[in-house]
Every structure is written in structure tokens, then in C-alpha cells.
Image 1 (cartoon, one colour):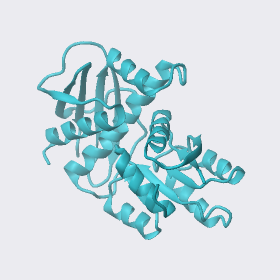
Image 2 (image 1 turned 180 degrees about the horizontal axis):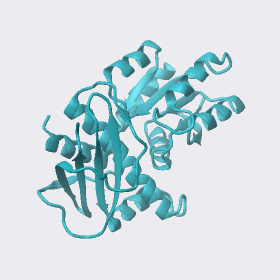
Image 3 (image 1 turned 90 degrees about the horizontal axis):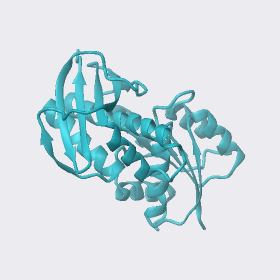
Image 4 (image 1 turned 90 degrees about the vertical axis):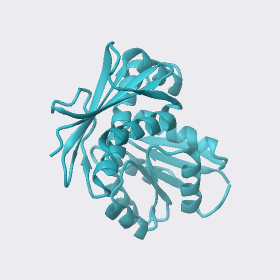
Length: 138
Length: 126
């Protein structure tokens, strides 16, 4: 599967099954606005990182829908959610691009990946968008 | 008889999602305990009887594979059915789990996939 299709598929599946959010289409560039970012590095026969960016308001709304009020606090729920989304999206992108060999995924980092972007996908949802990026594959 | 379950995952969001899915799939679920890593799970498993363990692989302190090894070597815990819920996709690792009779659900899962794996692990339908 191509890199952009793999990124799109992983975002659609993760958002649908974890957040019950249905994709409404794709965009070539991310809309403007502040985001919360997370990335997960992978190492194995190839290495690199997958990053995601989600608008702050969308992430807070998604976390509020998932977690009962006050448990855990919304800021912790938001960062935990974006970290887990990054983990799931990376875990689904890597086998789609590189095959089902043994890869190790790093714990999610709550920052954008530092390596150059190799591929990018933006998936649109009713209440925002998710950008997924593939970085520095070697 | 209801099933007491321990959900082991370093993500609080995922522990909650798995717990909610377990209560949606039609099985008689009793108590659901949570643990953020293998070490905490092992303490809980030795302290309380559980009928099912849902275990992630990539976790801090003690990962899921180490926890599964510890459970299988403990005569008082070796009977506990295990379902691994993970992003793991390598054919070699999944084959190794399958050889040990451990069911696997890949994240992100839908409730039907979870039901199939749990039913296969505990050996009975809803």
C-alpha cells in the first residue's frame, strides 16, 4: 500500500473504532489552527516515525465524549488520547507500508517528530481534522 | 457466573475503551480492574481471582510478553485465559502467541472482534 493511503487508512480506522468519528473526506494540506501533536518512532527492517496532529478543540471534545466527567481530568484524558491514537496509527501504518515483520514502537512522544516529512495525509471529520505524517524512513 | 476481568494497558483511554467494549458485547461481565503495566497487573492477579486478562504488549516497567511469561510460570495463575490487545502486527510474534493458545485482538478493534477473541479464550459463548 502507498504511504499516503496507509496513513489515511490508519487514521480512518483509529478514529472510527476508538472515537466513533466517521471520516468525511481528505485534504491535501492541513487547515490552520493550533494543534496537539504526538509521534511514535519505529525500528526494525526500516526505521522512522509517525506523527499525528489534532486541533486542540477537537481533541478535548473527543476526550470528553470518551471519558466520564472528571475521571481522569480533561487535560490528562486529552494527552492520553492523542498518545494512544499516535500509537495505534503508527502500529497500523508500519505493516501496511513495510510488511508484517518484527518492529519495535517507542512510547508515544507528545511532540511532533523531528525528522523530515516523507508523506502526509489529512483526514477531515465533522468536528475537525487529523493529520498523520510519516518521517525520516531509512 | 459473571466474569471478573483485569485490563492491562498503559493508556487510561484504552483501558476505559476495552472495559466499555467488554460490557457491550453481551457477556456476563462482573468486576473490571485496571493496571497500567505488567508489574501492577501481576500484583493484582496474585491478590484477586480473575477469569480473564486483557493484556497490551508495549508497556513500561514490565511489558505484556513478560507478564504473560510470569503468569504462565505461576501455577496459581496459569489457568487464567489471556487475550492480547495490541497494535502488534508481526507474523512471527502473532504466531508465537497463537502457539501458546493466546488469543489476539489488534488495535483498533471493533466489538465483534473483541467478542470472538474473548469467547475463544474463555471457551464459552454469551
